[in-house]
Image 1 (tube, rainbow, N blue to C red):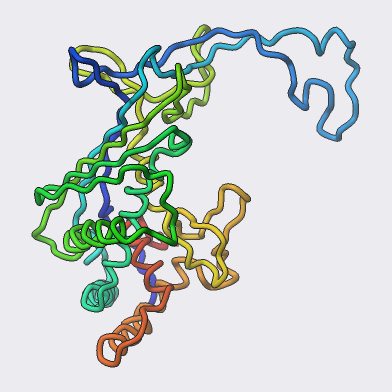
Image 2 (spheres, helix red, strand yellow; image 1 turned 180 degrees about the vertical axis):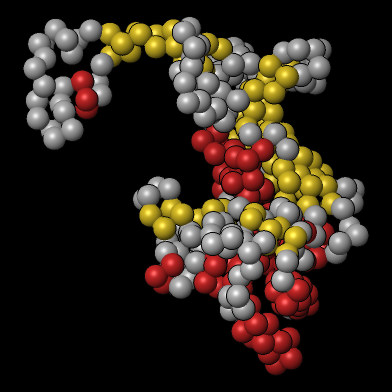
Length: 344
C-alpha cells in the first residue's frame, strides 16, 4: 500500500488538564498555587570554566565563586496539609476506525478494513488495557507519584466507580487478583468506546496523594524561548479558576503522553515502555528505537496494511495471537496525527 499525499487521524484519547488542589473543612477545592522565587544560585555550568573543546578558560578563582541570580517558579504543598488531589477528565472516541481525511479511496478502504477486523479479534481490548494500566498506576502523575501513599479513583460515564487504594504497589506486569478484575472491567468499557462510533465515553480520574510537610510538587513546565526582565526563567503551567486564582496543573499533552506509554513491542526483549511514536523516540537515551533502517517504524509498517489484514483474518478464523506490529500500528492511529507524505 502506498502512503498517500493527504492522510490524517483525529486522536481517540482526549485528556483534559490535570489540576492540583486540596480540601479543607470549609472548601472542597482550594487550588495549589505557583510561587515565584528569586535565588542566588552558584555558577556550576561547564561553560563557566571550559570552552567547547574542553580547554580551560582564562578565569580567576574568584570568577567561579560569584553567585548567579535567578528567578524561577516553584510549587509546594501548603503547611499542615497532608493530602492533595490531582484530577483530570478523559474523553474516548472511536476515531481510529477510519481516517479523518484521506485522498486515496483504496488506502481508506484498507485502513477501515484493518480497524474493523482488529476490533473483531479483540485488539482494542489490549490497547485499552494498557491505557488503563497507566491510569490506575498513576503514571500520569510523573515525578509526583513518589509519595507516602497514592489513591486513584476513576468514575466513568456508565456510572461505574473504580478505586486503587495505593498505586505505588502496582507494576506493569503483575497485578493482584482484585486489581486485575478492576483493570479488566475498566478496559472493557474503554475498548467499547474505542470501537463503537456512537458510544461517547468519559472518565473522571482523581489521585489523592499523601505528602510530607511542604513537599515540593512538579507541575508541567512551560516551554519558553525567552523571558522578559523579572520573569521566571523556569515557569510552571497554571489554569485560571472561576475566582481568578491560578492553579498549578499538568498540560493535557503531558497527561496524554503518560497514557500513551505503552510501546514495549519495539523489541522482543524490550526493557522499557516507550511513548507511542512514529519512530519509537526514546528520550532517555536520545535514540530512535524504531529507526527506518529496521523497517519497524510506523510508516514502513503502514505500507504493509494489506498483509496485516490477511494475518488478522487468520487470527479470526483459525485463532492465534495478534502480531505486535499491528498493535503498535493501531496505537499510533489512536494517538493520531498527520501521516501524509506531502507534495514531494
